[in-house]
Image 1 (cartoon, rainbow, N blue to C red):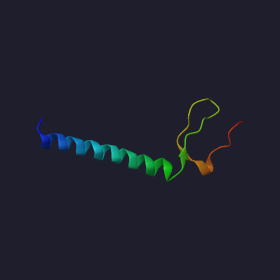
Image 2: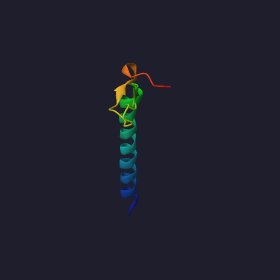
Image 3: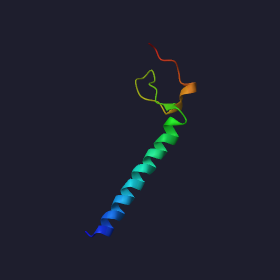
Length: 57
């Protein structure tokens, strides 16, 4: 592979990683989502933490 191809693939890989990171940041960090466990022991849908059910501790 020549230098231009390596540069192109490196740039595309960096853009993909940044895109995934930004999507995660906007979805989970800014909106403060969390995954909670239901009584059946399975995980429920992702819900905002303000409406999260209190944990049984």
